[in-house]
Length: 232
Ligand code: C5P
Image 1 (cartoon, protein in one colour):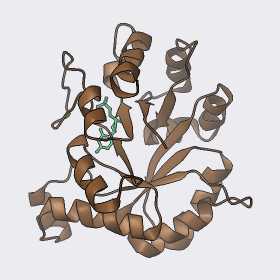
Image 2 (spheres, rainbow, N blue to C red; image 1 turned 30 degrees about the vertical axis):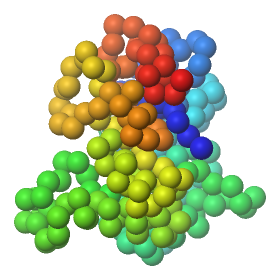
Image 3 (cartoon, helix red, strand yellow; image 1 turned 180 degrees about the vertical axis):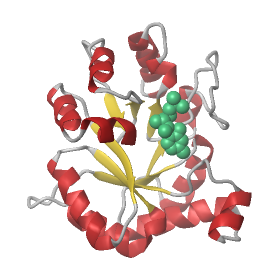
Image 4 (cartoon, rainbow, N blue to C red; image 1 turned 60 degrees about the horizontal axis):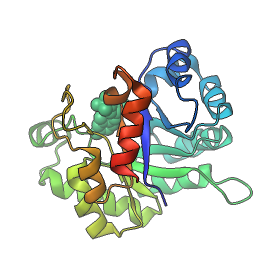
């Protein structure tokens, strides 16, 4: 399963998104739609991008009571997204409810992956604000294991964590890794980065790449470079 480059379409309008996607005339990239684009354009943006032949990772990071998440997931499943996500902190009951909501009458469903600890949370803020006193690496691994036991397909994690997640949860448990930069490109605000080639070596299943492609002078060439380094 997997091994693909997911392009983070962090644009604030459908117009800018289509202007960007129109450049890809041959292979249509797997696209990540985040909260900004989804909340500004609504479900029609998902339908439109699907119609153009792209796979979609809808990155809305749901976290609510199980019944609410189950019903929301049924809506996303009806939109025919290929991958979506929830917070593992919502507990096993929420994760299993999400899976139920996602599963269509014919038994098929989009991939469901978990957010463990957001990379914006560090040891200090985790201890101070959410009273989790354990080592943050143990917390990430614990969430990964809980997600696997609940039947989810994988986690979003930093490339540096992908190897440990696979060692603990098995090779088939997907690792979806942002924080990707070419050896010769800007780091932006990403703290822990890895090249597509290194992410392939450590066994990432999907890399999520935003600015190195969206802000490149030639986005199609940058995307093709990612494919060459990560997939070929
Ligand atoms: O532009 P860049 O390649 O940094 O974009 C990475 C994408 O992955 C963004 O959409 C960002 O929100 C997302 N992401 C991340 N780190 C996480 C989770 C998601 O960079 N831990």
